Length: 134
Image 1 (cartoon, rainbow, N blue to C red):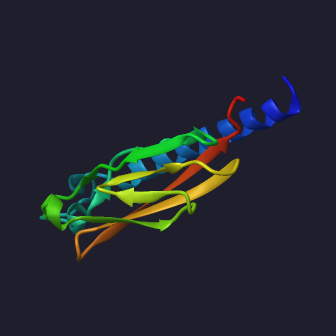
Image 2 (cartoon, helix red, strand yellow):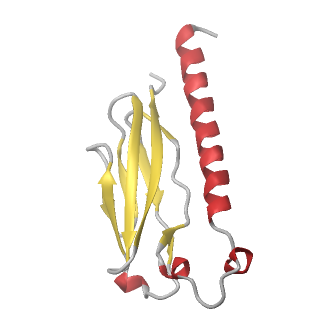
């Protein structure tokens, strides 16, 4: 394995480990209300949340597509707005789909915000753009 492939492998493994750790930490934060000893409704259930998982890699020059799925117990889908807070210039959002042609090898941060007009939450992702086969 040459040096370039080793670097790609190490970066890919690091990204996967980061995503796994984030998932574990996020799931620990989302305990059921009964586990918290709280009686009655909790505001946590009224916050819109992104429940889909973004693709973590794409080849340079290929299209990146992320169909964003959201849940919110107190809002209709018409009231929910998603926007890109931070991301590469080649990405855009249309009808809850983040897409674009990947430009430039590297790792890019993608932060999405979902709101129902009262509450909001963020989803932070990283996209690895790898050199395509020529």
